[in-house]
Length: 76
Image (cartoon, rainbow, N blue to C red; front, side, top):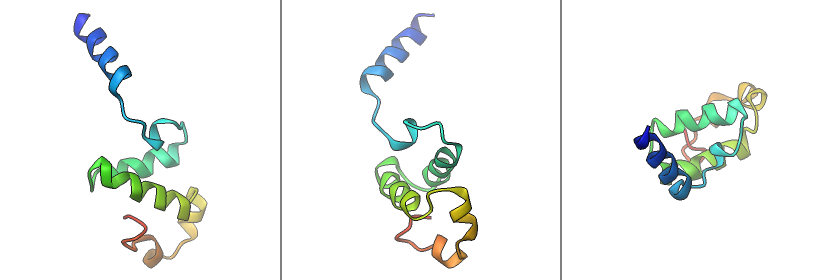
C-alpha cells in the first residue's frame, strides 16, 4: 500500500532517538509507557533516565520504598 510506504519512509527519516526505542528490555519499555501516559516526550526523557538510573531493573524497583519511588525528582 502506498500510504504505508510513505509513512514508513517518513518515520525512518524523521524519528527521534529515544532511549526506549533502542532496547528490547520489557522493563524499560514498560517504564517509558507509564511515564508517557503522564507527560510529554520532552519531559518524559529526563524522568525516564532518572528513573532507570535509580531503579535499573524490576528487582530494584520492587525493593524500593514507595516514598522513594514517588519522589518528584525521580519522575513518577
